[in-house]
Length: 303
Length: 303
Picture 1 (cartoon, each protein chain N blue to C red):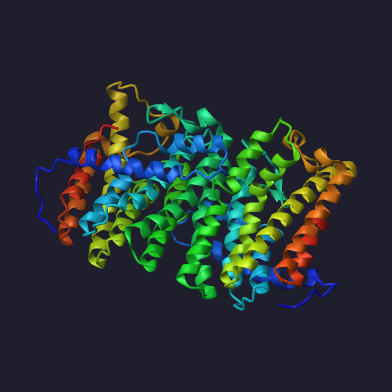
Picture 2: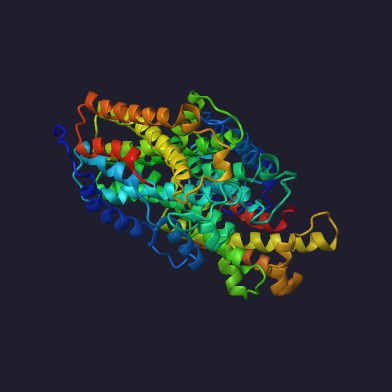
């Protein structure tokens, strides 16, 4: 593995990489069967193919390369993580959750296709993601055993002990005050589980060593928290500078990192997590410039 | 395979088989991770462990035995189908769908745990089902290749080209009049996809021949339609005889087999499908008394 080449042009990397991810994502949702009703197909397209950061597939591809993976077909596997993320956003925006009008600058899926179709379309993305992970793993050329480990990783991260567990903790946290540890636990599940799975799946596909997997676990946990702290900071500063993005009532009633640590304290926390993420890579000698740059990117992003 | 031994005591078979299924179902949902919030665990238990017919696992176990499968651990695989079915019922009962108060004689999951937790808990069952199918397939002792075919079968049946596609057709059929062919197509997806997958998964686990798989496909399609026609007949007769089970407003606004064919015509249709199901078994020499009896059971059941 190479040493750290700073400054690394992450922007150029993302501009090169995301079109391949978008292409694989398009292919994943347009494996059109005649049996899929048109309205369901459109709702799925709306929820998945809107403009997103594609952070999870990017992390998966980066971890794959960092661990020595060579197949150009890795995006076909990586998009399984975006399908899970897209379903979670579709359900997040429902009236019984955040009741959101806008997502990625467009009306939410439920505002366009109705709540009932959105619940169904979101749920349909979960088995699609599992199938996609299977086929993607095989496209990359891994063994049956590794393919199974990959699908298990995805299913665990997307389940009650992962993302959904965090979502339910988040629902119940509304209107109550959490301490720092409870807030960390919530976000480790809600955001961290899928981010960490993205890295682990890339690493598993590349046949990474146990040490590299453990390093990526630590990196993923730190990046996940940094990501969430940055979210809270964006929410708070968007309010302060009237950038037209107001936190919802629900958000205002939730414990945030800015609420617990203050704005300056939250910025410090985020940077500590970035440093922790980078240190984890050093420990396992995963000196990948993309992963290093991504750790900083998640706290510097503007959306 | 044995010839048809009539009369076959299906009641005794079900009384012997369902406790094994309940046990496996309990184990599937109580693989408790410390990471699963208590409320989510309870909502999942409520949605899954209520008293159901367990028709899908029963079909899976019966198809497995009919195709020569010997492992006593087949219920561990079969319950993956019940997990998908349970999630679909949890989402069906949401206010934006059927807004149901009662399910299997108890308050629906959303009435007890709220809509937001129910959406989440339902979605969490999908990756759990995929994991369960994996582990169940391995418990039964199939090859990696067959295990993959089984998980793919489950994911396809539970997806946009299967059950969810049928659910969306069903949503859009409210308030419009369908002809017999459109009604068949809707129910082939909505109910038939998972029933057929139940049989195919049992057969795949037993290493069934292609001919047996095709016969079970035909059997499954016919049994699925018979099941739905029986549902419509139950709804209609429950109204007529005031058995305390009234169709919802939404149901009354839907095209039903009784609406299309009349009550007598619907009873005839159901019996035709039962005959078709049995004929399919004969063709492939799958002379299993359980499957034969189950075909009749789905139209004679009282709930």
